[in-house]
Image (cartoon, rainbow, N blue to C red; front, side, top):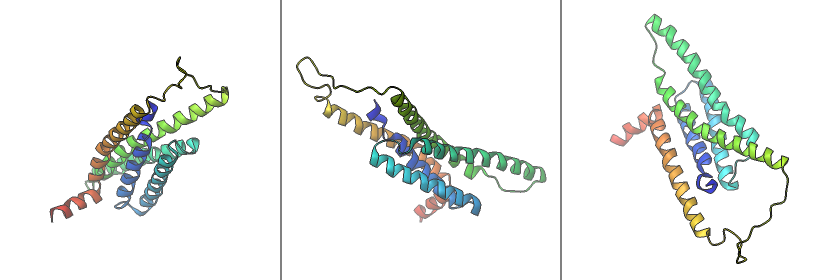
Amino acid sequence: MLAFIRTWPALSALGAGLVHLAVASSSAMWMAVVLIVIGLAELSWTITALTLQKAPLPRLSLAVAVLPIAFAGGWALTSTAAHHSRMAMGTGPSTASVSVPLALACCLDLVMAFACASAVRLRNRQHRVARPVLARTEPGGAALGTAQTGTGAIRALAGILLGAVLVAGVTVPALGATDAGRHAGMHMQM
């Protein structure tokens, strides 16, 4: 089952990186800089994770995966307080156009964070119990799993396709909710 969902964290990081870069395109300068750094870090992590086929530097990656979630939470709290004070005065624009994409990007970042936490936990468990793994064989003498390579490849491909569909189902609406997505829709109508 692990091979079935192995690429999902990398696909999720790709989607979150694209959303963070799209939100950065219409944000204030300080927020744009933070979002660009986060987005580029997520895209770099995606490339590395797909190349290595495992979570690279899982402890550091876990901290990096939690960073956008903490940033979005802090931004939501401060923007809500600022919006509340503007509502009392009767002025000010709504910040809902950034809240929805950041919330969806946080959902994608959680997938990356869970994968990194699992990798850290697995690495800690392997260090505690360092025993040699012997190849098990069937009664006929063939190693287990050699006849199932075709089935494993089909399951891995199905996992990649299902993961891509799930990530696209979150990423596309998030990108559409950004200013860049709304402007792209206007250009498509011309």
